[in-house]
Amino acid sequence: MATSADLLVDGYQRIAESTRAVFQGLPPALLTYRIDPSANTIAWLIWHLTRIEDDHLAGAFGTEQVWTTDGWAVRLALPFPDEVVGYGQSAADVALVQPAADDLLGYFEATHARSIELLTGVRDADLDRVVDTSWDPPVTLGVRLISVLADGLQHAGQAAYVRGVAQRLTR
Image (cartoon, rainbow, N blue to C red; front, side, top):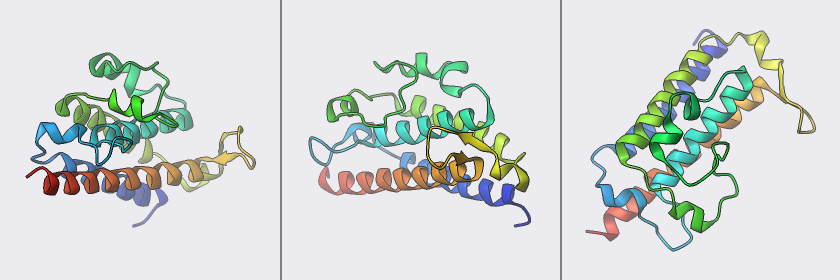
């Protein structure tokens, strides 16, 4: 890999591969399966990881979110304000995330495509640019991109785990 952009694109592609694998052949009922009454569902985990990627990259690059500009907020019709990304939501909120699998995957794919478009333009010198001053120390683009990458991989892995447990327990 020759550049930071190449590494970032590779990392974000791994989120996409893991997310697509969760959806492949997934019975619709398992999308909202809960291991216990307080557990996150596959639907919530994928929605949340996508919202974080969409929100945080849009903020870091000064662009609009796919969620609102491409109509995904309307299409998924979740009962939350548009700015909600899932952080700090309750078990009751998790239960409200019940989109159709095609819509959820469509939102993920649209966000992923936008992310790759943004990431391919990253130059090494861009990584030190401060993108969020609400933290101490302020967050740079490099830190934000790695944070979103780590969060996305973690939640995609959690969704894969939930799928595996659900498939074994619902046979």
